Image (cartoon, rainbow, N blue to C red; front, top):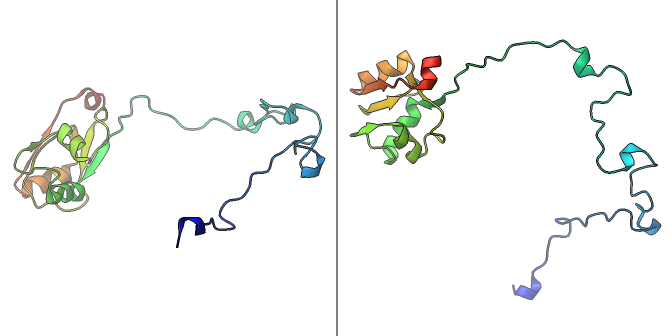
Length: 159
């Protein structure tokens, strides 16, 4: 095969329709926008407008509650922790903190608090410093010969 023999698949790329370029194109004159009016012009803003009738988003009652003090955690499972220790991304001999978890790629934001959950099994005895941990996760880590230190951060004080 030579460079001059390369071709695109016939149905891979579809030519775009050039609208409002004469009546011969099939999309001439009004360019597929119908007749005059608001919708034929740019900057149309009638989403949710129901012709003067009370819109559905105002007819329906408001429901629920959004807790402004909710703390959103970055969850780390025991299985994920063990996987990263086995791969060498985390060093089980040293104390693991939030920065180590961030550098290894187990979490992706330093601003959010970290919580250890007991999903999976941990074989390595690790010393870990996190913002929160479930009771089962703490038991599992201590059973493996490790230690969990819960940090008193601003986010966990509010919880």
